[in-house]
Image (cartoon, rainbow, N blue to C red; front, top):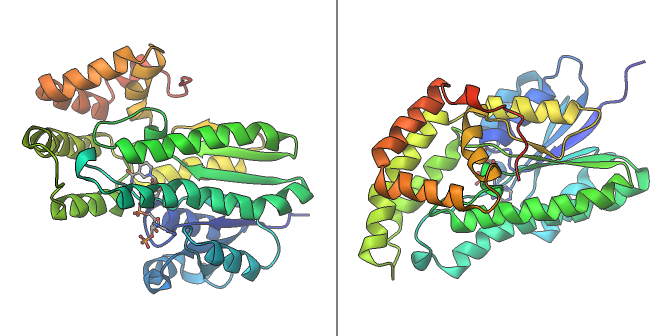
Length: 315
Ligand SMILES: NC(=O)c1ccc[n+]([C@@H]2O[C@H](COP(=O)([O-])OP(=O)(O)OC[C@H]3O[C@@H](n4cnc5c(N)ncnc54)[C@H](OP(=O)(O)O)[C@@H]3O)[C@@H](O)[C@H]2O)c1
């Protein structure tokens, strides 16, 4: 007899990875999942519903959920029939720019969404998972949860916070047969980058000195665009990795879906002092941007990839 479908609740399904994941799980030919695809603004549900097609109302339901609101989380969970078997914390926002020009409120919003939004959801589903002694919590983290990236200080900090939080929690939860998986994508071609660029072009970064602003606009932004173009993945690639993790009988704590990005995360892993990573990132951005561009093209074509194993451990 086939096992009962697992209820998967996903945050942030109005676009990108969340939307793709919700649709892929809901259209599983073996109907192994009942997907609760959530978003903070139901006015944006059109693309998800269109992509879900016949799965809508069958294996996929859409629900309102703002991860920044306790009430919204409570209301969403009380509207679900049955229990959440798999929680996918996907909702997230980015923030780039020189620190001096970013308001504390903007920084707090990143933490409230990326970190506390996730913690809020986990706190809400945990009691039932513990009672049933089963569950799986998947978190869409980032390679920036493993290593800092220039001008992404706050975003990286929010993802580092998730990594520390879940690595700690994973130890306790094993006792309850509940698994944690942190999926750490590199650049992904979604609306995420476009939203960031729109934010940046509208921002003036008041209080930032001209030299720093020039580094940000003339060095970092072009390098970031090159990075997305060269090693950016499709959301479908990331979803494939998440589905694999969800279906694993022994889910891994960490999984990096982007093999082409691995040489960059390896820079930190091979030299635990951090010196190699910080120095080489600095040199490539500030001294040898052309070499950075060439290196990214090599990563894109795969000639550096063969030097490292895709599943190499990271710090
Ligand atoms: N794209 C990348 O390069 C990349 C790389 C590594 C990791 N990630 C991570 O991947 C995850 C998904 O991002 P994506 O690339 O798919 O970008 P995306 O298309 O911008 O999707 C982000 C989703 O999060 C939702 N969201 C934001 N604030 C929310 C809130 N308070 N409550 C509920 N939902 C909220 C957005 O909803 P609205 O439409 O209402 O804003 C949207 O549905 C994020 O956690 C991101 O940090 C992305």
